[in-house]
Image (cartoon, rainbow, N blue to C red; front, side):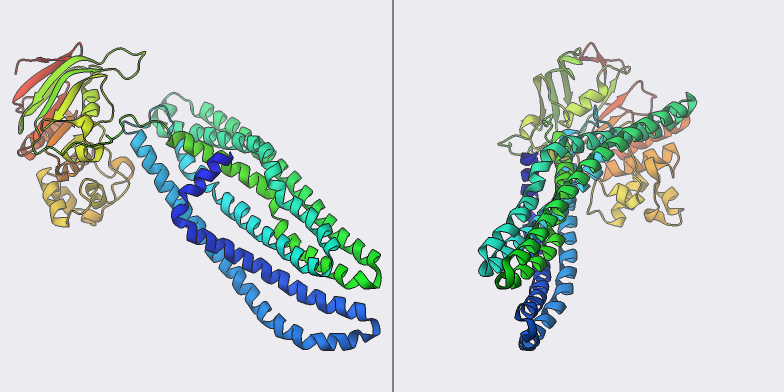
Length: 556
């Protein structure tokens, strides 16, 4: 756990000044509270110690006390406000950075899809597990800095008057300060169980909703609800266990606070007239210390939850990249002729070969139709051409340069892929199009839409380019959504376009019209058209059929 939390702090390095400023504001706010009670304690202790002369002593201290109390009383709420403002700003910035880092790591490691990682679990890691890290700063580090300042200030102030009393107060307070480190290993198991249970509950909710049509068609909604209820009960049990441990920590901390307070009271009574002033000062300081140190025992549970969240984040983020970028990249190619030589590939060691000696040539400006039934590796080839996976043997070159020696970002600027389930995101049409060209002007968007023969449809919409597509593009028919996805592909500067079953799911007439649009829109780009069969409107320069892991010429 400790190693994961230290790594989190390292990832927050860019926000270190915000984090330090928040901790400093918390320390100043706490010390201001201590100063108020120190001044009050001096007045009361001096009055009690002087007996009948207390009025004289109080009068002597009154002017000085007022001079100090007023600025401290004004500073205390300001410091408190700054503490809240800066610590939360620091937390929000650090967590935002963490989410971007985690998303980037996932994008590098899951290029071909979520795979064995369930969507609900990944969502939980990106949201809940990242949010659990706010406890590391707000409920562990900031209270720890304040509490340490309290212990040091108390030892200095009381120690100057009576070292014995200072030791009596400092020992239970220091124990309260160390309590989270003692409780965290025990709470870590409960925190891990709660994090896992939360992920399982998210999966139980997301999975049947993602395939809601299949769930309803099989009358499985009752079973899905029962699973949600069971996982919810498991999460509640895990959270109760974690809360129970936090409560025990809080109780232990309260006992230590009470021990410090009783120790100061006992010292006051036992010390007699000579130690009465110091003893009462200790009582006031023990009361002041309770505000800051009272938060520390529960910090153990917060640390455990943060540690569990960090471990789950790093578990997913540290998955090996399927195709890491080369250490010494090659010079980018000047041409875009594509050649596959002796390609051998399987998705896992215990699975059969998809390709065994595949050869393929795509000259610049050529159009190849790659045919074959499902399972012959058509989409697998597209994944290999974009470095979503790496071959066991063989070579793929672009413009004469082995793509293994090109950074993935450089390759994907030159090769793009219109997948068979190309997705429109729940955003505006313009935002969906600019995924391929972030700096594209509206005129370029309209040109791409017109080339995809969907511009008139968008112009007829009230919000035009600002129209929201809906989740999965539900705002549009299948053919319209596919044409908008095609327009996005056309905006890409790539010279090689892979069209993977681009008309899948469309009716016969819409499919024929869409494929004809593709033929007209591709211009001078090199094209690999992946299809089950040709309809006669594609006009490829060469037709190949995938069989037994090889590409075999087919009749036109």
